[in-house]
Image (tube, rainbow, N blue to C red):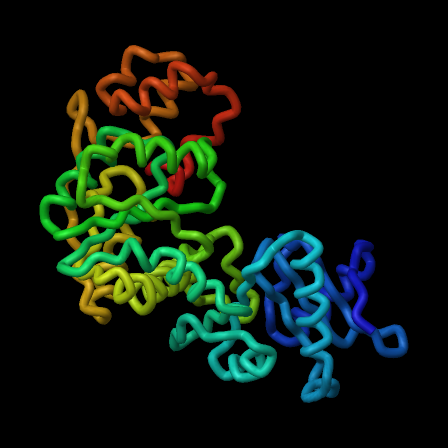
Length: 336
């Protein structure tokens, strides 16, 4: 019988089982499940957000119904939480086990496989079918936390180089400004560009927070793997659907993580006939414009600096909404 492990004692037992099999126990989870036999824990699984992880079944109990029971209970927990699309990362050799439970492979990497339960990606693409344009199209994937003159410059310059440009906004809410605000500011800021469409990434920009590495070797570079999976997903599914042959990025003078992502993008996307085009960042006061400069101006009360950093549409929003409650602006992923 599958039970939820809520006590620290049971969670220690789960950790012991997981680590005994050479896997890594991850402290972050919303639900942790276990199966006991004669008082001993023999199987575990967990969910963090819409990611399933920490599947572990003791060797003598493998090959039975335990995996299906764990998956069923995790699916039930998603239903309780109102989560409709969910995913699992697993070893390539284990992907068939999940496919038998109606998971569909999205990306096959040499070190891991990303699978999705249901047809969420297809539903996402079908919902945007009317926005698909013929021709030589491009894409920009941005967070816009908030939308700046730097973003405007990148989008405007990219739009000049393609027949149609798709601006994908990261939906995940780990930013100072919530997704609904970020999306609104982008749409208002590019409304005059007739060959630009603003879309959201839905679940298809994989989160670095929820990316599990419990089954990987300790010397594996988890951040690089996450970036590669993200870009393979874009190259395999998103780019061909929208006829995207170019993906545009700005130069990155500040954040090593973003700079590394740009380098990996060039390497990965060329395998899908997508060219990475890097454009020089727009500057103000001899420094590249970044969303972090905007947030810093807000937190320090330097509102005089904003007109040279953000377009009028963003400026009107910032002047009409108190900037309280901003997150730590030092995080690289929040710069853009």
